[in-house]
Every structure is written in C-alpha cells, then in structure tokens.
Length: 380
Image (tube, rainbow, N blue to C red; front, side):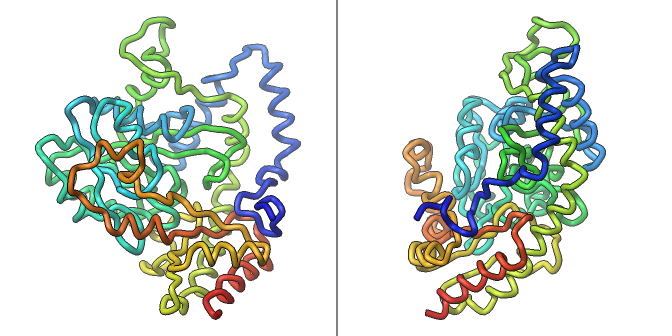
C-alpha cells in the first residue's frame, strides 16, 4: 500500500481543489495581460503590501523560496567568510546550507528534548569570538523561545535571524512569527500554512533598510530603478506573478485555515496526553491557548516510531518522519561540525519524531480516526 492509497494521506492531493476555477482564471489573466509581467509585477507588489499590513512589518520581500530567503537575509546582514552562525542541530537542511552559501560556518547547537526547538542555553554555549548571528528555527507546531534569543543576541552583540519558514500565522507574546529578529522568513511551498501550488517564500522585517537590500539582492543586485545596474552581487530569487495573484486570493482565508489547524492540534493534544507513560509524547500543552504555537504539522515523539508508522498505515493513516538524521550527522554538513561536539537531544528527535495529518480540510471523522489509531497502538 502506498501513501496515495491511504484513506487519510499525509500530503493531500486536493489542497487547492476548491480554488481550481480561480487559479485557471488567474492563469489566463496573467498570460494575456498587456504588460506581460510574469515576475515581480503589480501582483507581487500588492501581495507584499498586504502581508506587511497584516503583520505590521516594515517590509515584506517575496522571493523564490524559503531557502533563498534565508540566504538573502544572511547576505544582506553581510555575514560571510570567517563568520559563524549558531543554528539548531535538528531541522531542515537550509539551516546549514544557507549559512554555507554565503561563505560562513554553521555551528550546531542542541535542541530542547521535548519541543525540538533550539535550546537558548545550548546556543549560548557555542558562541565564540567569530559568532556573528543566531538563527533559531520554529519546529513543527512549537515556536522557538524568541524572547530568550532576542535577549541573548542583545547581550552578546549578535544579529538575530528567525527561521520562521513553517510558522506563518504563529504569534508569540503578541508578536507575529518572523518579526522577533532583524528579519524572518516564510516558505510558501504547498504544504506550509500559507502554501501555494509551487515554490516561493518571503523575507519579513521590521527594518526598511534591510528590506531594501534584500529586495536588491533577490534580483541580481539591481535596485529596481535602472535595469542592468548591479550594485551588489545578487541572486535570481524573483517571485511569480501568477502565484502572487493566487496568494492574494487565498490570504483572507488564512486565519480560518489556521484556526482549523489549531482546533485539530488541540484535539490531538487532549487525546494523546495520557500516552506519555506509554512511549508516545505529544507537543507540550503549555503555554495555554495558541500563544507560541504554529500548526504546520503535528509531531509526536514515539519510542517505537517505525512500528507506529506501520500500525497507522495498516489503518489507512499516513504519517511522515521528518529529519531522520541530525544535521551535523549528515554527509553534507558533518565536515563543519566541531570535533567532539554532541547533540543528544537532536539525535533522539531524529530517531523518534513522527508527524500525523493536521491539514485544515480534514473532517472531524478523519481527525478522530487518526487519534483512535494512535491511541490503539499505545494500548497494544
């Protein structure tokens, strides 16, 4: 049985089915518009303005992916050769590859054993005279402790970059994800909270000047006033007009979709709370409510992960094991790990993390079926 055969897939094939007619209309309008601007046109500019207004940001710069957004931010902050950036040892490859892309060195710090986000104390322990920035990342359904990282960055004179790729819509202590550091990033890949049928992302910032530099770097170092005048070495990280128009169409519905994700996650957390003594740990319920929470995916820590995944599949429920190896254990990044360093919590997370479906158009019956299947496994 493949994941596409399962009654409850992890990545649903019909994410945008309800918007099919709108997408086809926008495709025709974009393709036949007199200006023939397929990238960085009026729709992209409007999407950036609308997101900035929604967030209270000084600037939002749409770009080709969340990964390129991280690279653009690091470059705009003039982080480069000889510099170190402290990153989580557990997470997505761009946490390390974006640092390497600008010539700097990622320094891997361990994560909290339960929430799986970067531990501020572990991050501070890795700071050296070469450290230029901290880059915590929100993970699965929990935001990193940004108040602690903001205080640490100020105390040690470091730049703070927020990898909020999975956390669009999350709010911590009244501040949206992405606006705790000098800049944050979002990813619009289809399965993210503001996903779209393609690749894309954005840089969000409270600094108009930083936004100006990022905007220049995303388009080969041009400032937008005169073509073919390159003020800095940049990248091709431009945004698609069709996708911008589609995202503008979907933006008003984002709060409702986020609320549904949160509702599903709250139900899971209540159902799974008694399973901790039986080898299945759900995300922590504190703080109460939705503060510091994002609901990109819902991830359990299971002592018998493979057995749980097989059990769920047998009952028609797909699951997904993200990041089955800590970043400094990966062949690509192991050469940059400090000799003798260890990341026990990251290693444990890589062995135990298993995510279950939490997308907003799951029915109540499907959500209950997922929870029932997990609970049945724990009762075996």
